[in-house]
Length: 465
Ligand code: ADP
Ligand code: MG
Image 1 (cartoon, helix red, strand yellow):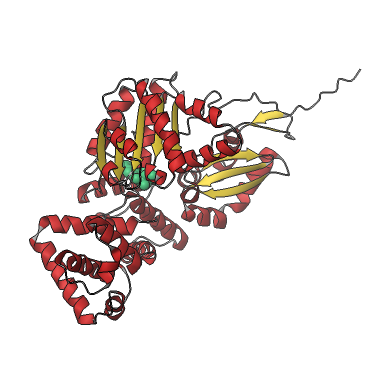
Image 2 (image 1 turned 180 degrees about the horizontal axis):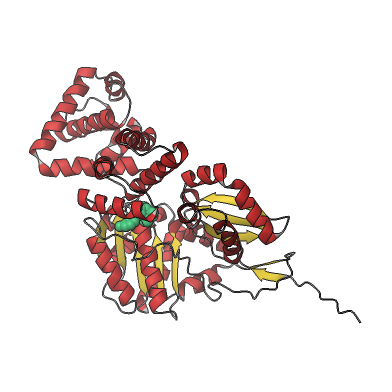
């Protein structure tokens, strides 16, 4: 009698499928190509026979799409069968690591696999890519790094509760949060560590109201051991979510659970956020992250260049470190762009190529900056009414803010002196020139003013990035 073996649906995760694909890819490309372009890809989820994979940024996408599209599709079809397909997600656009949920699929291959559930009991939301090992300690992040380490070594009853980390975009806040979470999970596997961005927290909360599942939502958050909430400035203007979070915070705090938060500004500057929350944030430790100094930028560049297998002459590294100053994400982006240039054009990297790349990065950065936005940020920093800078008021503090906004508009946008003058109440171009000279000489003579202008500049350059 024949025995008919029924093919059972098996549980597969995106990771398992992706690992199989990687094995196929590995035997078809050089180790360098494999390490540079394929290792950083992250499997996100499996939807029937489609695997979603996450690429670190758009350069990867362009590169892979041009060179390895066929190989990728071949490997997916070998793994998932003829219906196998692939969807690219670019990390810059997703922000959020998705959980690797197992789903039911029928595969054509006869092999039966044991389902492996990643984080079966608890969703950590953590991205294993970010660790303390690959977080470079340097000027700008020393305190935050030390506090992060302290909390991850003593996640119960630390004296830094909550730990509040703040700083501009691309300076490593999210990286540090995941590093802390990953460290706690590794050393205390029994603890429930949960990372969530404030945006996701808000969306999930609102969904829970709609679905009548607020209780589940509340229970989930009140039962974590370490709660990591990223970018809490996004709570501003969301009263209901703030209120809910306030109670969650209290409940966790009172039962001695660790809370770690980040924001783009210090608690006192989170205008529009409930005072009760702000005073809670002050109960623990507040640590800022500021842009790295030149030496730290060089260390970061060297290490990241090494990681992606790019060798760069010291002169070029020096040029990049001197010209990309305010954002670690941009340092990384620059290296990847250079790598893509070198590989695509098969040319050696030289200083002109580096200059063009740095230029491209600063153009992209500046293209979204407008005089309007500069004015808003300057007025916000100087705590004065935006309309007043545009009218004729000669009051000293308003005149100074106007001059600062004019100077920054000249520095950071492509507007002509004439246009800038017109914007600020129909003044002529000589007024703008005068404003620029005044601000420059003040910056030279007054260190505090110098720092203040730079801080405002950083806020402008990183706003909305
Ligand atoms: P933020 O959350 O402050 O906007 P991220 O944590 O997303 O910044 O960092 C942006 C990029 O720069 C990430 O790829 C991160 O890994 C990298 N990065 C930031 N700081 C460091 C650091 N100190 N060492 C290594 N990489 C870093
Ligand atoms: Mg972040």
